[in-house]
Image (cartoon, rainbow, N blue to C red; front, side, top):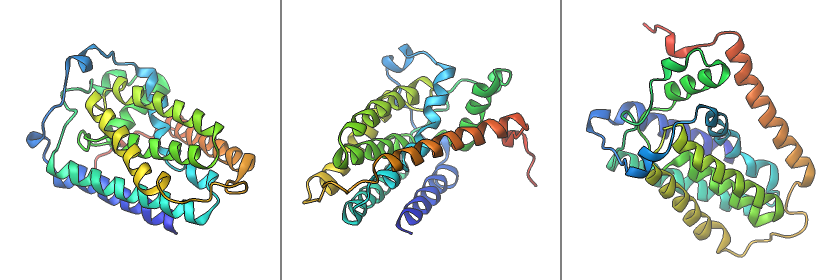
Length: 237
């Protein structure tokens, strides 16, 4: 129930701000020479999409209820701070993104890019909320389990690169997202007296279930691509 409430808060707030609260014409760009130097890499869209299951990782690792509540609080505060920033300081990637339709013949990767650009508004950039949540998830694993957490942090670094090489975020957005996630973890999780004891995780079974979730997630996306689900072409009304 707690996880569901956090997910609903994220979805309603993120898309509410992105699609309703901000006009892209009123947003600003945070482009730097580094952004111009970073190439667009279509294949990195596969890494980018892993942000969604990655944010759910603590569900499959953190067993101690007190630890999990603190992590959920860190998620909630991170989302709230990011949403406030999106409203007060709107940033747009309209001038950063390539034309997704030009990759319509690029197979599954091209389809993922079009879906990403369709679902994710060219706003809600600073800080990168998706990256902040992925980093929070990785730090949660570090907090209770150790070694798998190092892998999670390494994968989060890959995601940080992907948000820039898919041209969905500026470098400044990525840095701010990591800083926000790290600060929330320090304030609400690592600085508290937590159990972090043996038995505080779901062990290998939890990690296996998370791996199965990731496989199902990408399989579902691939299946949608195969059957020709192209929501960006649908006429509504």
